[in-house]
Each structure stands twice: as structure tokens, then as C-alpha cells.
Amino acid sequence: MASSPSNRHRIPFWLIITLALFVMIVLAVAFRGILTPVGLGLGRVSVTETKTTHTTNEAGQKVDIARTTQRPTPWDALGLLVIPLAGGLIVTIVSHVYNKRQREREEAVQSLSAQDEILQKYLDQMSDLVVKQGLRPRPGDSEPKSHIRNLAQARTIAALLGLDGEHKRRPLKLLYELEFIGKDNPILEIKNAGLDGANLSELTLHNACLKCIDLRLSDLKGADLEGSNLYLADLRGSDLRRSDLKGADLKEANLLPYDERDPERWSLHNLKKEINLSESSEEKRAPRRLKWARALNIGLPWHTFRKVRWRGVRPTLAKLTVTNLKGATLAGAWLQKSWLGAADLTNADLACADLTDADLKEADLTGAVLTNANLTNANLTGAVLTNADLTDAVGVTSEELARQAYSLKGATMPTGQKKKKWFRRRGEDGQNSL
Image 1 (cartoon, rainbow, N blue to C red):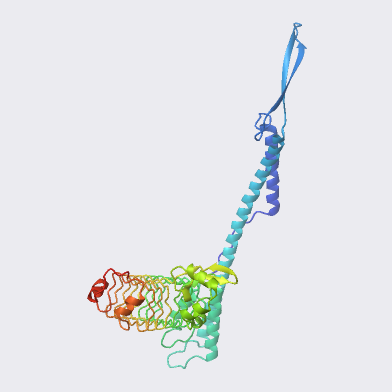
Image 2: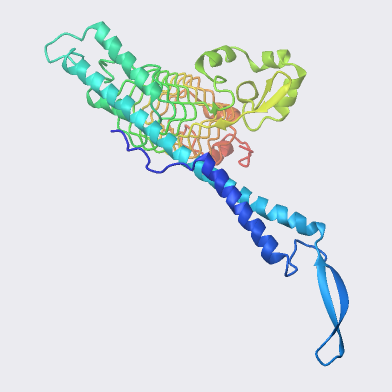
């Protein structure tokens, strides 16, 4: 439903000029007629002249009368010019600010109206495809024709591209409620759909098919995505705090940070190129200026997550948004070959999760529950496992954890022992830096 246009109007330019000139004239007259005679010039030094005249009164006596006059100084002329100009300038600035805010309101109203129009048009088109074209087959009917499905998919993707973050959740919720994107037998495939920056907080999408979907910088706080298929999903920089991802398929999903100044930096196709270069080979090929960049690196692995990038001869500092999984539930989730480097997994529930071949470099797993998790071939280089529970985790030994992890303070090892007891049993110092 379109919003009503604003009933406020901007101040016309001719009126602003008229008001400014009027204020300038009034202030000039006031300054000239009131301030100057009483000696209140703008920081002036008064110059006075006294003349004595002789007059004779009625009694025939001579009387001396002194007449004192003040000559205007350059400061008087300056005050007469500056104060009116300042008044006119103030009027102009206030009018400009008012017009700017009014223009922003009008643009916001127009944008909202355009968004509502796109959404309404999409709903009408989908209603026509469902009711008249048979997009949703009735029980016993065959699947819808391929050209109808392709048309519905194209219209959905086009609508999502034209909607802002607040409006994108409505088409997605509609498709889910109509059972068009069920995980087992989806009628529509919305891969590569633009849901980046969408507000999907507290949205419920059980067992939904969201393969290859673009969810960069999206708000998924408290979302219920239990059992959903997020294979190859782009989740860079998304906010997944306290979300429910139990049993979700996150194989090869991209949960790396999002670099606003270099958006394609950690896209999947670039990652596959970079992952083939070992750190040693990159060191050998890197020019000297990149070695300086390594010295400026802030807490991220050199060969993948360096903060400083070089554009020609100019260094650029990355502006990263870390994927936030604090308190998320990923019990039983499939994370094979997923990219979780530098992700914030503080207090995340990863019990029984399959993390085979997962990239967890520099991931913050403080307080995470990894009981019975499968960590076969998982890269835990520099991972923070402080107070993490790794009881009965498979695919990784306590020795490998001690060698790779940045911190194991207070962690429960796969053997069920606390880190200190495990070190003592091995005859090593329990106050190890880990």
C-alpha cells in the first residue's frame, strides 16, 4: 500500500533571498539607528570632538556652551556591513537545512512507495502464476511446466534485487508459506537470489532450500533455520547470533568476514584460487612491500586474512565485518569444507556437528560446545578454544589441538580431561602458554 505524500513544502528560492535581504536591511537600519549613537560600535574606539561656543543669555551674560560630537570610525562601517550579512547568512543556512530535511523526507516517502509498488506487483504476478498458470500443482497433478517455474524464479529474483532490506523478508516468507522452497522437493530454486543486507531476524524457515543464496551482511539474529539447506550459501559478515541451525546443511558455506572496501576479496571463486597457494610459496613470490603488510597484519592469518591490501602502490586498510555466530545452535549441522575463518563462534552449540575439512583458522570458539563433533581434517590453526568442550570429538587428537590452537585455556580435551590435567599426564608443564 503506497504511503501518502508529504504535505509539507520546501521554501522557494525566491522567498529565501527575499527573507535574507529583509533581515539584512532591518539589521542595517537597527545598527545604524540604535547602536551607533550610543557608542556600541563593533569594537570601535570612539573619536570625539568638543567645540565651545559663546552665547549671551537674556541677562546679557556670556555663557560657554560645549558641543561634543563623535566621528564614525572604520569599525562602524565594518559593523554596519558584517551584522546584516551575518543575519542574512543565518536565514539562508536555516532555510537550506530545512529544505534538505524536507527533500530527504520526500525521497524516503517516494522510496517507500516504490518498494510497496514492487512488492504489490510481485504478489499480483505470483497470484496469477499460482491460480491461473498452475505453478503449485494440485494433489495428483504433475509438476508445473518448466517455463512457468523459470518465469516465477526470474520474477522472484528480480523483485528481491529491487527491494530494500526491510521488504526482502516478505517475498521469502511468502515462498516458504506456499511450500515453494521446501528442502526435499522445492518447486522454485532461488539460488543466487539477492538477500544481502536483508532483515530476516527471528524468521522461521524450517527445512527450507536456500542453496547458493546471497545472505551477505544480512540480519539473521534469532532466526530459526533448523534443517535448512544452505549449501554454498554466501553468509559473509551476516549476524547469526542466537540463531537455530540444528541439522542445517552448511557444506562449503562462506562464513568469512566481509570486506566492505574489497567485496570480492573472499568470494568463493577467489578463495579457491588462493587456497591452492601455500604460505611458503606465497612468501617466495610476494614482493617486498607485502612483507611490510604482514608486519601490519592484525590477528589474521597472513596468506588469507591480511588486513592491509595494496592497490597499485597505495596500501588500503580492510574494513571487515566478522560473521557473528555468538550463541548460535549448530548441533548436528553439516559444515564440511565450509569457510569459518575468523568467525565469532563464542558459546556456539556445535555438538555432533560435522566439520570435516572445515576451515576454522582464527575462529573464536570460546565456550563453544563441540562434543561428539567431527573435526576430521579441520584446520584449527590459531583457533581460540578457551573453555570449549571437545569431549568425544572425533577426527582430531589432543596433540593436534595443542599444536594448532591459539588457546586451550580451560578447554575440555577430546579425552574428557581438562587441559591442565591432560598436560600433566603427558608430563608437560600445565602452565603452557596454551
